[in-house]
Image 1 (cartoon, rainbow, N blue to C red):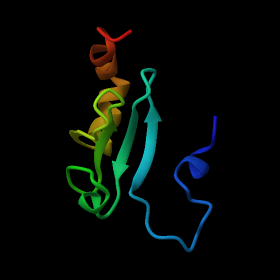
Image 2: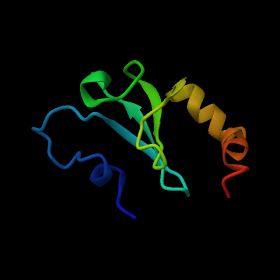
Image 3: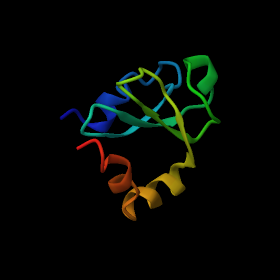
Image 4: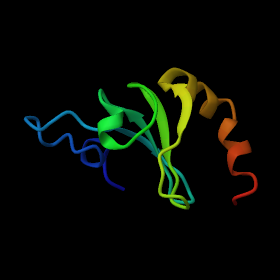
Length: 88
């Protein structure tokens, strides 16, 4: 598995700010990411610092309507279990 710096392209210190930071990959192929400073310019919904999830089935980035703190709390407290109950 690649490291967080490689996944997020942070090996280019003089590059533009990232569209967001990848937080996690899920089993069905989705990606949870934290929106960067201008999410709309990268085709992502929500505000900066919202967590969005790339859905491979629809090729879209719907927002979770959670900031990083709320999303992390959701993950730690079993929120993902309900999300994937019917998928796996």
